[in-house]
Image (cartoon, rainbow, N blue to C red; front, side, top):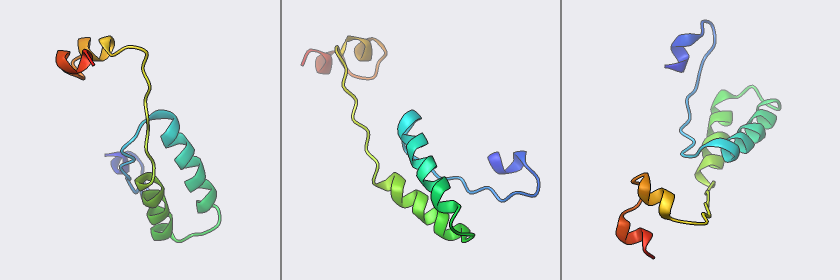
Length: 79
């Protein structure tokens, strides 16, 4: 785990349930909040709250690549 890779540092792992840019935006907000407090539990709660309110919407030009990659069924790709 990430916690095992560093000595002398307490690591809190938070499932962002997201990837890439949205995760980075939330991490920046959490880092700004963390600079205002030493309350680790409050920082973790804040991060979890932000990630729980985060949704990602993806728009694609074609469903063909999703079908080819097995992300959706051929029937769904016909829509």
